[in-house]
Image 1 (cartoon, helix red, strand yellow):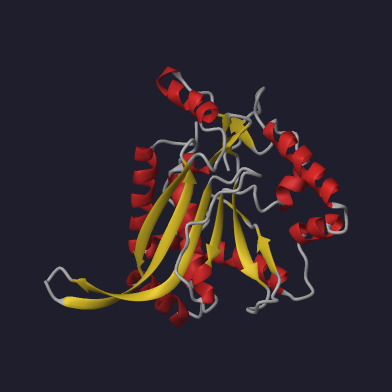
Image 2 (spheres, rainbow, N blue to C red):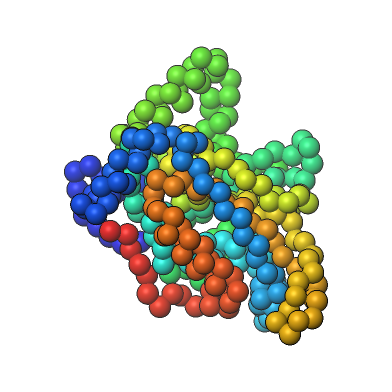
Length: 293
């Protein structure tokens, strides 16, 4: 990520967005909509699987069999952030910050059963990462956390407070929430918290259901929640007028509208769609990287 000298008002996980005279409305917005629940907007996108499946078939022929559809989605998210960095912003203490790194919180089940333990992994990425880079980092984190006897930083923190009285847990969360508002929450906790990430991703399609609109969390700094649904077949009219069956994945996204305006979000999702329509571009680093200002 971009190296930038820390100034007064910046945080260890992001720098303060100092809006100009043309952005005064965005200075006021966090005071009007004070919570993420008050600021949620919903997007619904249908992604054509044909280009992705063609790419995966090619990669398998080349011997790369450990790259899956969800890796392509994650790589597309990272690439989109590298070009549209404002979606990596967050609001804390009624102020807007640009996150100084890229990471994704990913919900996983250690076993596909009602009693299977759920946890999260949170790999960190670079804006220049390719599909192969993303797959390698995600697979390494997944293998470690998917072990039935394995734990990660999030699990260790939860276990540390598991047996405390409920009023103590309530006080800890209250105390940490307020420290986080002013950027004083311990960095070690930020690093293991799944609620402090560029985006939260869940693949509910892996359990056979359609995508959902998942709320944003009040605790933490995550401004984007992405849900991938199951693969579905639909009849569509091709350009030649013929009816054709195609496979899609429905993606639902919930975002915090305080970090950027609707036009920026709209053009960002158009970029994401273009990347997913031509996923082969993810095999190479981006030609340029755009940094937030």
